[in-house]
Image (cartoon, rainbow, N blue to C red; front, side, top):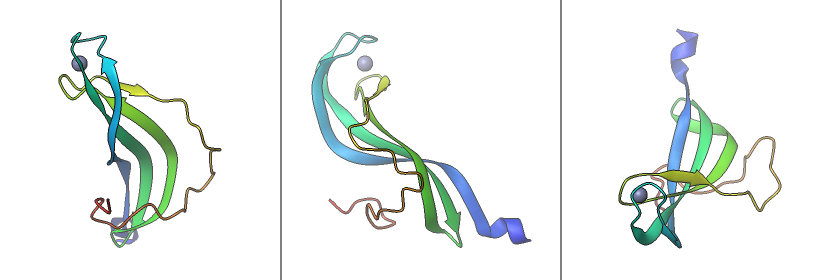
Length: 90
Ligand SMILES: [Zn+2]
């Protein structure tokens, strides 16, 4: 029973428009989507831990995604609040 209270998984959060790129897969040039990917642990559906944060940009046409080199220092726990549970704080 104990384990049912915990959730664990990889989530994506939209980070707005990214760079204008030509996709190596579909060869279309468009504004890629900036995404933030992280591993999240939830307790009673409330996120308590986020780690393995990675910035990505994805082709909106075919979904090809590339990791970006991270500009910030990696934080071991990633507890900084980045938005509400809706994921659209804008
Ligand atoms: Zn593409």
